[in-house]
Amino acid sequence: MSYWCNKNTKNITEYLIDMHRLSVFLAKKHYGECHLITDSLSKPYFEDVGFTTITTELDSLDNIQSTNWALGKLYTCKLLSERGVPFCHIDYDVFLWNKLPEELLKSEVFAQNIESKIYDTYAFYLFEKHHKNKNFIIQIPKREEDPKAYNVGIIGGTNLDFIKRYAETGINFSLDKDNIECYSIMNSLQSQAIPCISEQYCLAVCSQKYNVPVTCLLKSVKEQDLENEASDIGFTHLVNHKYHPQTKDAIYLKLYENELRGIL
Image (cartoon, rainbow, N blue to C red; front, side):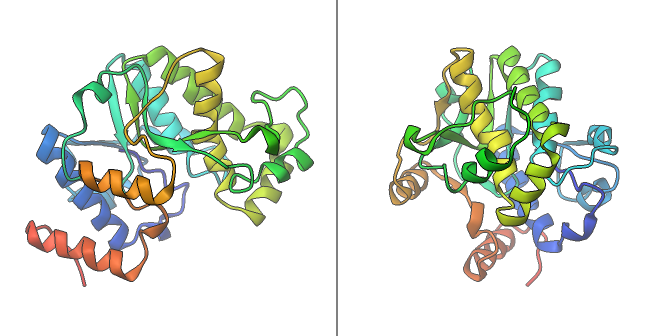
C-alpha cells in the first residue's frame, strides 16, 4: 500500500485509518505481510494499523507542488519496480475477502478491470481545450474513439521494466510544467480527472505503446455485472461508496467481528 498526505494530514481521519486497518488485516490473512510506503507526516497515524513495515520514501515528494493524489501510488510503483521484485499494490479501500487468483499474480501486468466511456468522466474535453504542451507524452483521445483505461485498485505484475515505464509516464504527465494552468482548470471542475488520467489512462496508453497486455481481475464491463463478479470472487473496492453511511457501518461491523480497533 501507499499513502501520500501531500503535506496535509487533515484528511487522515479515524475512519480512513480504520479502512486501512481492515484492508491490511485481510491482506495479511492471505499473504502473511502487508507493507506501507508513505511520508514522515503520515507515518505516525498508521503505526498501530498492523503493517509489516512502514517506510517514508514518499518524503521524496516534499518539494512537489501538485494536487494529484495519485502521485504517491505512481512513485511507489516506480520504487517497487526498481527493487526488482514482483509486487501487488492495493488501495486502502480494497478488501480481499479471498486470495487473488495465482494466475493473475503471475501475469506480466495486472489491474482490476477495464473502464470504458471515460471521455467525460476523465474530462478529456477540458484537457483538449486547455492543454498547452503540443508535444505531449500521451495522445489526447477523441470522444468517438471511446478511449479505455484500467482501474488500478490493484496493480502489479512481473514485468517490472514495463511497470517502471508506466509509472514514469504517469509522473511525467502529472508534473508537466507547460500544463499547470490546464490542470488547475480541470481540477477546479472535475477533481478526479488528472489522477485518473495519470494512473489509469496512462496504463492503457503504455500497454498499447509497448505492446504489453494487462490482465484484469474482473472481466465484466457493465457496473452491475462488475459488482456481481467481484462479489462472487470475494473482492471489494469501495471507490465512490466509501463514505456512504451503510458502508461505514459495514466496515465497523467487520472490524468488531475480527476484534480490530474501530469507532462508532
